[in-house]
Amino acid sequence: MSSRPQATPWAVHALDEILTRAAAHSPDKACIVVPDGPTLTYRDLERRASAFARMLLQQGCQPGDRLVLANCNTPGFFASLFGALRAGLIAVPIDAGLGLRELKNVLAHARPRAVVVDHRSAAAFAELDVPLFALDPAAGVPWHDLDRLPSAAAATDPIGSIQRPDGAIILYTSGTTGSPKGVLHGHAGILSKLEAIQSWFGLDDGTTALCLLPTHFGHGLIACCLSTFHNGGTLVLCQPFDVELLQRLFIVVARYKINVFSTVPAIIRLLLRFSGASGRPAPASLRFVTCASAPLHAREIDAFEARFQVPLLNCYGITEGATWAAMSSLDRERNRRSVGTACGCRIRAVDHDRVELRPGEIGNLEIAGPSLMLGYYLDPEATDRTIVNGWLATGDLGHVDAEGRVFLAGRSKELIIRAGVNVYPAEVEAVVMSHPGVAEAHVVGLDHAILGEKVTACVIRRADSSVSREELISHCRKQLAHYKCPEEIRFVDAVPKTSRGKVSRASIKALFDGQSAI
Image (tube, rainbow, N blue to C red):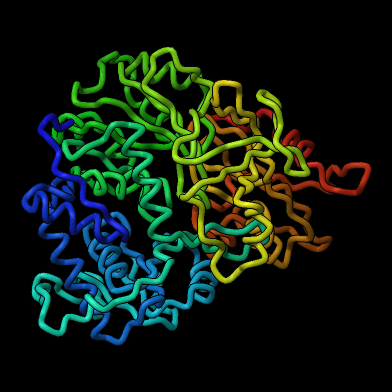
């Protein structure tokens, strides 16, 4: 962390101004470092973002237009993100690994002006009727060399007259019906979250952070990357969930003098496995590690801290709240069963009538504060159901104790969290049942030693069908992202139901008893 005096604070009112501020203060400071790859300074990224913004405006883009970013975890992603925001567009980062059906649904909903691709994602969009361009020639589509585009302001610079819309970024999360839900966040809301993270963890321009997570979802993008830029620090940018990298993670931490990284429970479990019995602590530069996006058990925190001699801080949040709402402290005596205390917001537990419960009583968790989403894009009814009188229903169960610590007690939603990523059973069920040999399908999550949960399906075949497990999994992989596809399928003649005729998911899970861990 930096010990030198900080410059006079420069207030920012839009996310791209984070970059402008850092470039003015420390233009030659490393902004993004790619291991064994390029390094961009804040001046480099600021110049490329401005060049990209002007290119968008010259091509006729208007404030409020959506721009899909399918080049995640690359320096070009951030040039296009900040450039889109500077031009008044709404950035839409997405997972290019989604199935064709899913990509079509997202594009139909977002109605983007174009999609920014790279060599990894270009093929996924080749069959879709949407303009494509890239920031490097390897993608095989029209591309723009930002180093050759003008970045300096001209006398008639269009950027200066841009009226930014309230919306800044749309983060997609699949709805429980399988239809896409775009969570629209504004500049002010995300900025308030970045300020809360900076204040809570004491981050500054001397911080070097490592990004191991996808930049198309809130945890990786906001809590890891944008928070680092907001501090004026350095981001070491890696590909997400790179198992080969995880096996040498602490070598990378030592090489780049990493101070902090954020992760999900599945990665914590892999690190504990990969470390073997070496007993070697983490490099001295590493101050702490944060973990969120899925439940993390207290015993796993204890094991990690004992093995690596570095604090592992559990955090809690949801996409609709711009990621973390509760954060754990560095206090050695903290309660490791808690996901922390509210920071920059308020958290409460309520009953079914949304009346606040007393400390310690389990209920539905709600969040209120400046970082809540503006709403679900193009879905005011869902927005009104989710946010009532300024309180956002998280869909999670838990309680808040008398000291303000938040404890999770499960999920009221039926979603599955696999390696920190949400998988909604209804979406997977719809794909399984689209196979002509399936009469009925029910999807549940089973405990998994590494992933947290794995996707499993209980299937009733049609009378004349002999469809196999392999056929159904192959069918799903053609339409869904790999992490949403069932890893285990059990064929049955009937499924357990409650006295009211509803499917008993607890009984379905029992059918797989003994097969859930590896």
